[in-house]
Length: 252
Image 1 (cartoon, rainbow, N blue to C red):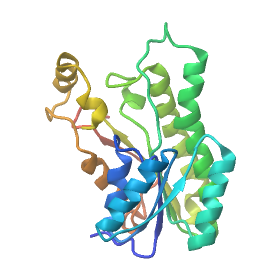
Image 2: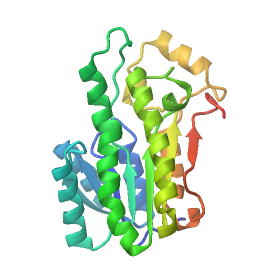
Image 3: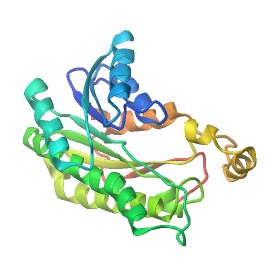
């Protein structure tokens, strides 16, 4: 068991019932951490907080628009006023869109980058300040197999580009602030068993599975387990790294 007692962990995008965020939040709570459920979906935030508390965990909900600097700054101020610390930031919030480059608009490109890259930047910049002051912090950013292999699962070229940008940003930041006791790492999930996957037509689903040596989609818990380890004290000498969680669909 990794010990997060006394630590405050922010998980962006953890109010959605469809993605990985809720599982990540619940896993941290099960390890003793106080988890901040940060999402635009206020009903989802409330539900996730209730579920964690019903299981004996500690959670705090806050409405967050990652693309709005004022919203991000308000989140950080609220957390610091209430808890006096931010130990872990999980940049999980993200969006996708299935569209070809030929049909893509500039607005499509901007919308994907606003959330997946610029929102991640705003949250990281705001949270790393109290982490550096405390000489301790863990930041884990969610990239994607699509950012490494150029798509092939979900989303368009703009999604792949935004997730590739996350990798470059994270490695550079690791060079900047790791000496202050703050590590920055990425996870790159492949096909994961979420509602998006379940909605695929069988022919499309079979085609994707054929490209996975393990022959199945991953589970959200398998992604959460890797993230929680990277965010732990035990991962103290890992920074600037990208961890593939894809069943072998992409191998470096």
